[in-house]
Length: 146
Image (tube, rainbow, N blue to C red; front, side, top):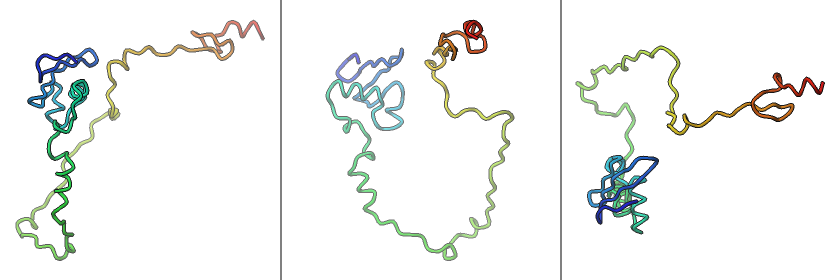
């Protein structure tokens, strides 16, 4: 975390640099603005300054707001036969969307990060002699021992 002014900071994270502005409650990763709560970069700044993140969260994440949400009673719906549906809505036919499954095997849900691609794969080790680089079938010491 490198301060630029009292409210603007530069935060380095895995070879990238993000700009956090506490005054405007923004971060260049856009998570702070979208979620309404401090992103990981803003958390680092707040921890460094020994500040509480409560001031930088939107009001609807605060306990008082959540309690006010449940002040109003929620009444259950009557039986479906007693519903009063307007005629122009009742005659409307809603069909499921037209969807054609694409050809081929479905993609995996998780995208691999760059660090996972750059890791070296393990090499074989022989179960007979314990050395790396070959397996039991191609082991030269096994034929000598037999």
